[in-house]
Amino acid sequence: MQRNTGDTESITVEYGFLDSKGDDVNQLKNNWQNYAEAVVRALIEYLNLTYVPVEGGNYYTVKSGDSLWSIAKKYNVSVSDLKSANGLTSSLLSIGDVLKIPTVIEDEPKENVYVVKKGDSLYKIAQNYDTTVSEIMKLNNLTSTALSIGQILEIPVKNVSNNTYTVKSGDSLYKIAQNNNTTVNELKSLNNLTSNLLSIGQVLKIPTTTSNNTYIVKKGDSLYKIAQNNNTTVDELIRINNLGTTLLSIGQVLKLK
Image (cartoon, rainbow, N blue to C red; front, side, top):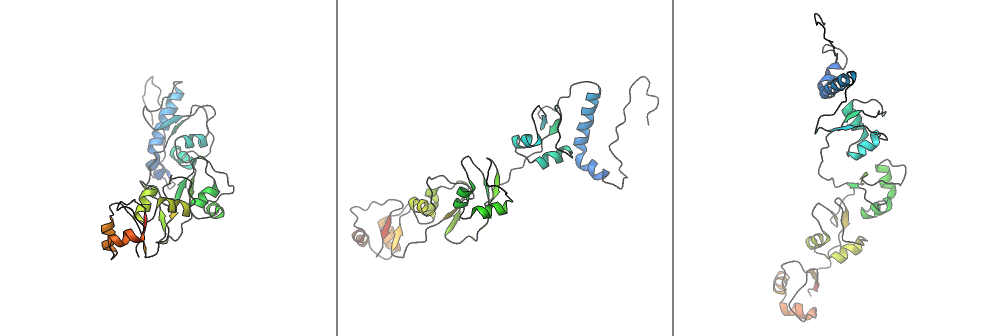
């Protein structure tokens, strides 16, 4: 392959064979960047030079004490994705190894997943999602109740009825209470909440609509408007609710008849 090269050192790099009946073609097609990087790194090491990863590239140089698990956690990727991106067949690393970090594509938060936060426990999470510890453990193949911050749990999907609501981005207890004709206090009481903090994907029980002879005041309401919509009068509303003024508060419960 190499002829008349003179006083130069020639090196032949064999990546694979395009006419191979094995997996050479797919390997070359899917991993050509990794192969090219590996050759550059090998040549530099052969020449006893210091290899420096591409500036600004998604690469990491292994340091003392590193492991695939710690590197994967640092870059928020999985160990399997890290091994796949670098063509690794084992978890063994050497100081100075340069690893390519796979790009993470962030999806929209799913309604049936939960990211573990500081202070969480399986019991607490199960309570918030109206499920049980055993159901969460079974769905996530957990053998222990121990959790780690940042761990992603799949939450058992319930048949959502009309009296439940799944928290979405931008929601607040006040907003949910308004939209469901209830109050913040009623939501907190029904869901055993001790604070107003919510998590995306959290399932809240919604108080069953009160009887037809009551009404919960919403933003923009007035006694006149409520009276019109409920076939009564302002005077009647004032009388049966013992009101000393026509001013109303959002969330206030009025008797209608």
